[in-house]
Length: 547
Image (spheres, rainbow, N blue to C red):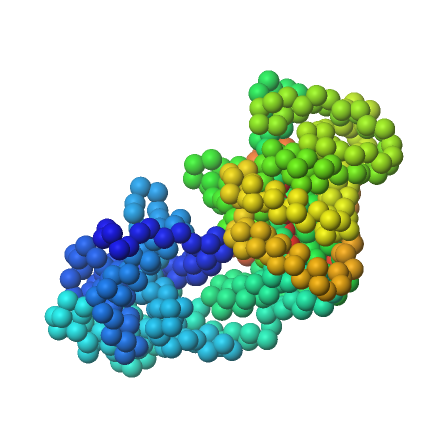
């Protein structure tokens, strides 16, 4: 690589956006079809050739240096987005003809798409095919293009062919249906999250053909959703070594009421995750495993299917990060514990946490004791008391944490800033957005503004929903042992496909984990349950926890 060009890094949200768009272009043989449009399909620099031809289709001539710089940037973008196939350098199903056109549009080198409709992809491919038939390649050789290549590009006899790479573009998208978040009562710190979430929703509506299928526009209007995922280790009395433990919580901020609704999930069967392992390791999977099994993409897809909420942002943190955050940033979190509690021991990064005994009343929980309160199992006589379950305690802790942070934001500002500058880029914390921009820089800006402007009223905690069988939670699902003859999943229970009968499944007996439309045929009863619980206006933020 020439010295003038160095490998580029991109913000997580840029890579995520590229990845989401790329997935909508997938179709069989896409890479070979792209190569077939080149004057020399064996070239060792196909992206330069594809970029040059795409630019010419927009009547843009690129000099050699600019072309080379764009090719390196595009190559770094696709590599860093993690779309390559195992054992290969290239995912052969990605349509780079369409992606490069969009890439050049973002660079201001092509005509931007109409903001109200999405017929643009088809138009772009038509322009490109015309240019290919008439232009010279970047090597200066006269281009010729055959009938097969024209058909590949979607143009045959002047008509547009709805091949998979462009079929989504032929559907008119009414952008007015995209659920917008208005800042309204939102505190200063959340305004950046809100404005950028609105942009992301517009992009997803344009480029993700499943967006309106997965999310409920009415439910998401004026809601910002962030996923918190805690990952770590858990104690199993029947095993010597610790096991993996994950938990997911959604913070859904309602900008009209200025309240955070807290939604946490028990172990619920998630077919989206099971489909990732059909060939190698079949079996049921819990929704809490989404991040561990497929990263932020799979977690977003699964949670949007299950809840109808737009997953605007996602954060994954391990136990040690929570210990450090409680100690260094918060100086402890005071929780008003409504009961006497005895818990078993557990683990943090392989280190044993001793059993805990807590008395009723306000308790300042620090470090490992806070993590123990969140995830240690109650012992013996407390084990079957739903109000003492670790999921209920997690909600208690998050409520206390959120209240304490909101009301002491100004005073704790410097602590928060220092903590994130110290910890934001450690492996203990992962996010699908740029932590420096959204947290560190945003926090600095917020504190300066609040030094001049009056501080708005701090957000409060609204609904607190634990999605679990009604014996231990608020309902919305049921334990698998409640499946009865006639339910679609009853044979899975009888044949031990579902081995853990306390795994939750949707309430509907017609819930079908094998349907190609999981939103309507599997998750519908849970989606309706959550919609009935939540106010129809607000912002959704989801936090997932893997332990």
